[in-house]
Length: 149
Image 1 (tube, rainbow, N blue to C red):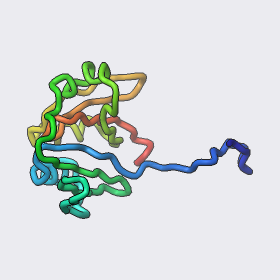
Image 2: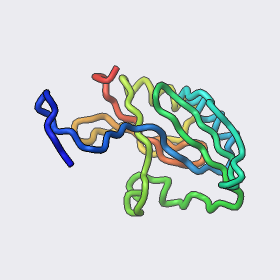
Image 3: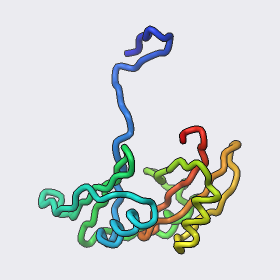
């Protein structure tokens, strides 16, 4: 159900905002370290949840969180999910995107840390974009959005 707000913008009956993204990984401790060291996340919690039969960790960076899962005997990430142009051919969530003020500075820093670059900086619809992989091969998009900083 939609209605008008006082400022002339439409408002939906369901109010939402991004909270977190869940990522399944083969080794939660290695992934915690990767997200801390490479992207500056802070560990919030790390526990075993019997109902899920999984190790679960929450990390945060500002007001965004990542939920990491390690489940015994989970299927590995399929090879085609490691490449942006192939991954979009499989239904499901594709990647997490992070805005940065200066993509050249960020990608240079990540390369100096030997981060796995899936697609180096390129232009897409007027924006500068790049893709990296986390330590488990999951795709991460980096987008230059200087107006957000």
